Amino acid sequence: MNKSEFGEALMAGRTDFSGVSFAGEDLCEMGSEFTLYDINMSGVDMCDTNLTRADLHQANLSGANFGGANLTEIDLRWANLSGVNFRDTTLSGAKFGEANLSGADLSGTTLSSAKFGKANLSGANLSGLNLCDIDFSGMNLSAADLSNTDLSRTNLSGANLGGANLSGANLLAADLSKASLTDANLDGACLLGANLAQATISREQVIQGLINFFRQ
Image (tube, one colour):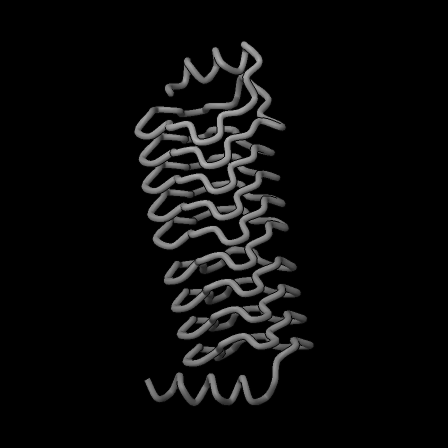
């Protein structure tokens, strides 16, 4: 389905687009003319589409496939993005404020200048990404895969990292104050200069993580 066909369907009153394929289409700025609140787009195929500056805030996109798409400056605030495949997408400047990204796969993405304010990233796959300087303060990252990520200088204050996989992560000078790291895997993580004030973390986690880091 292309952009004009999508617009015509919306004007005709269609609200269920679940499973529809938009693969390879140019959908730049899609949604700016329409309100997509309560529109069901779960399981849509957006693989390799151009969604630059598209407005999909509040849309239900659970289980959608955005693999390889250009999502530069897309608006996904308050959207249901649970279980979405974002693998290898460009998400520079994307807005995720209060979106549900639980279980989403963001591996291989470009996230420069992305805004995640109060998004739910529990169980999300962020492994291997450059997350340097991104503000994750107060966010739910429980059970997220953050292995081998660059989180240097990142604001993680007050974040829930319980059960998260931080093995091999670079947390150099990161702000982890008041963060919950209960049962988090810190094997080989770099915590040099990190702010751990009032963080929920065991001494054993820190020691074991540092030992494994210096063994590398």
